[in-house]
Image (cartoon, rainbow, N blue to C red; front, top):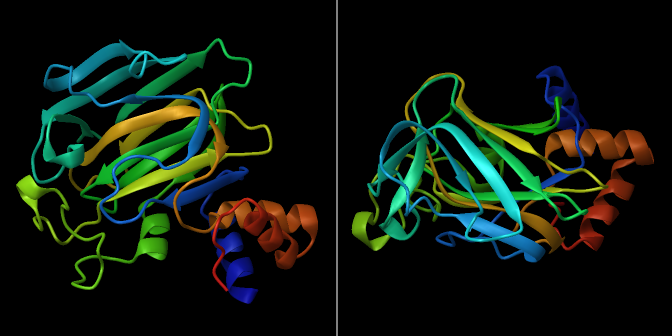
Amino acid sequence: MKLLIGAAIAALAAGQALAGVTVTFENPGVQNSTAVFDFMGVETFDDRSTGAGQTFGTTFGGSAISGVYSGVRIDAANQFGSALGVGNHAVTFAGVGYELSLATQRPEGINYFGYWLSALDRGNRLDFFNGDDLLYTFTPDAVDARIGTCPDAGNAYCGNPNQAFLGKNAGESYAFINFYFEDGLTIDRIRFYEQPQVGGYESDNHTVGYFLSQGGNGVPEPATWAMLIAGFGLVGAAARRRNSSGVVVSS
């Protein structure tokens, strides 16, 4: 309990916005979400031209969700990016990063984002917004705390898992990450950026939707624990709530 409270305090001190968000990780090598959706779509970038500074619209494969990417770079498959080792992927090297705005005519809104995050470095970050409100900031520390650091010969998340680049870049993590916004929260904008500036920020299979049940393995983010502790008065209540949603909570 002391460790969880300490993590919550640290998250608040770091300036992370509190949000009802659960983050899970798919098994090593899985490059799409295993969640169950009411509606969803995926942007694979495979039909996009390669090059930097691009702005384009998407329907995420003809879904009920539309989006606009602003200032994104598209690269062809290499050891650092592209799901399954083929096609294209999104990249940013600039500190300002790029943004994805989202909209849907469905009244439920959008409460899920997931992506194949490859070649993780300590600068990779995501900000999630609803309007002007920052709901949540995701940092590489959240990845390391749950799936371990690299290089590590015993960590199946280390190095590119795809046949074309198998085992390359073993010093960085490759994982599909799910972000579930709960308690009525929805998102309409995501910012992808590097802070600090380290290298490239590669990702693919950007998945958006309205989830019905969660997939992947993991535990709630420290910021979520802080909110739940404040709302329910004790860690045990928060743990029981997460267990009831099918998310594994470490003892």
